Amino acid sequence: GSDKTEEDYEVLHQIVSISSVNFTRKSISGFTELTIRPLSDTITFVSLNTQQTRIYNVTVDDVQDVKFTHDDPFHQICGDPSKRKLDYFSDEISGSHFKE
Image (cartoon, rainbow, N blue to C red; front, side):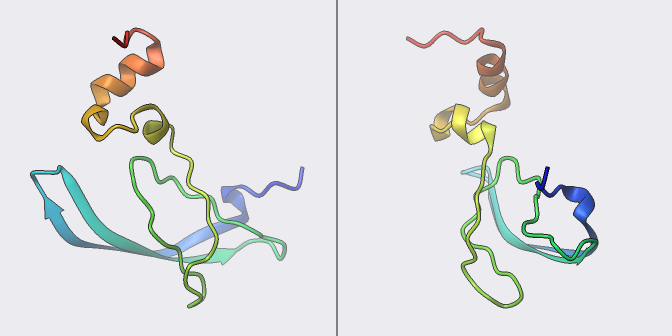
């Protein structure tokens, strides 16, 4: 089909900047910057593995707030912050977690 995959580009450089660590909330905040080289003239999107993250905005070629989608099964299953634990996620996936 016409769907693009990771093979349509290569990552040339990545910067990861951590701006804060919150041990109480068990969270890390920051940003990443990717430099990619398209391997196709018809590339229309970039697919990234962003499990267990929250994405607030995306910038492409200095254009801020580019439209993006974020589909993380972890957030769909464990949307409640109190349930964001690997044990709960594993139980939900295996179907062995019974809700009261």
